[in-house]
Amino acid sequence: MPAQRGGPNRGSGTIRIKGGSVIDPHHGRHGEIGDVCIEDGRVVASLPPGAPVFEARGLLVLPGGVDLHSHIAGPAVQAARWLCPESAGGSLPTLGETGRRYARMGYTTVFDAAIAPLLARLAHDELDAVPIVDKGIFLLMGNHELALDLARGGRHDDLRDLVGWLLRAARGYAPKLVNAGGAAAWRRGEEEGEPDRELLVAFAAAGEALRLPHPLHVHLGGLGRPGNAATTLRQMDALREARVHFTHLQFHAYGGRTPAGLRSRAPDIAAWLNAHPRATGDVGQVVFGPVVTLSADAGAQYRLHRLTGRKWLNVDVESGDGCGIVPHEYRDDRLAGAVQWATGLELMLLCNDPWRLFLTTDHPNGGSFASYPVIIRMLMDRSFRETILAAAHPRLKERCALAGIAREYTLEEIAIVTRAGPARALGLTRKGHLGPGADGDVAVYQSPGDPAVSFAEAVAVFKDGVLVARDGEIVAEPRGRTFFVEAPSPGRGAAEGPGTALRDRLETGHAASWEDFVLDEDALARPEAVPGGAAGVTGDTRSGQRDGD
Image (cartoon, rainbow, N blue to C red; front, side, top):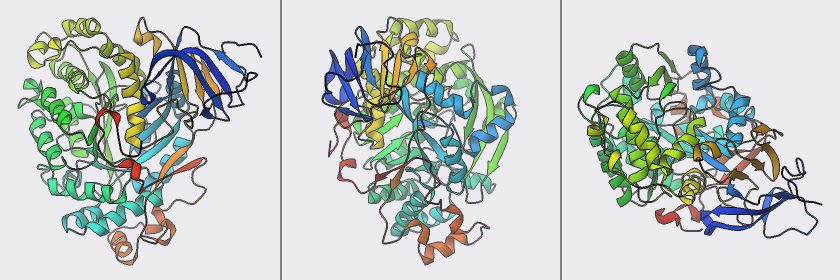
């Protein structure tokens, strides 16, 4: 069969992507010319001569992108659409368009980072309507009243069992903390205070005991507050021995005492990450323009509403979770927004190891995930980001260190922070690389004269070896998988409940029964279980190395 651009395999899952410049950091492929062979949806070492061919000469060949922290479905996003209909199609694309936008950019996997366990059924239903990409959910637990009682009472075995049962029952992938204990205090009308570091340690220990593929996913206290870097460092230091992921760190890296005095303390946060190789993080980069902010950190969202005067909605769920929603705008001529923009870039540029700090916008909070290509250019092109810096608020340079940072990311580093690194942090061994056995998720790009153009629209995208996008046109919309973790269980399945003592306490004070948390076997359209308790998910993440690789 003659080679052709576009490929004849829209339904076969078998293709030879021939003669491209292959960038696969996981396997040390740094742009040498070669083939990527996919058979029945998986990468293989070779194919017979008559296999279909996609001609990739002069093009870049990378694994499909992996976004490990986004907000694209579920009750919070649904409520944001109600409050902010003006953002439809922009910050809040439809479920169908969400999958298509990711695919056009070459992304093939995305995780929704904050779903209340009691509402996981709705989230899974909506995620199933997101085409093409594989997906999963992180379950909110850090303000669940029973979990808080167990953690504060030193009942660590019971906390471990509750976390594991909730993951199994709701088909979740990882436990998520959002300002642990603080959001619950705000709902009771109490002062939030600084998060209890012993509480963080208890949840981290539960995650480590379950040996989950992705560790505890932590949204620290102090979100968006001037001067919060000091609080951030104290919380991070409490978890210095734990395997943990710190999310949207840009929003937790500020100095100053008031919004008018906001300044970056990204160098301090980056230095901590550089010194603690078990931790990973993502940046939550801000992009100038209108956004919709949504967060289970309801008190922080209320503060943003009071600060900006913009409309506000808070949604509570009876198990102790919820979400605050506020539309917002980051402007380069406003000092606070300009500082936030610079802080994220500083974090990415000052963190020495790209395997441990990944590109996100905390979509839609810092900006749309569709902004990733322009952020990639900022990371790769110092002159481009300095042009933006020069046009921003005139006092920005005295509030940040960005102007003095010469580093420019390489294509290999971009492949790490958008693909190989997030896949490894998630424990998804078939994602983020192009070695034999990997999922046949491949993005083919023009060589980037302008990375913002090249990465905005892939020349071709293959999902499980099937061509799904060609020069910005979606040509197939297969149904993606939903990943969930098979957390170890002390002899009980999700449908049997969490054990008598935990079950009784779970139902005390709530109208919801424990059965309401449990999803039926057929609740996920295309489920794929990832085992917990694996030896390959422990150890340090320095330079991308981890036990079991």
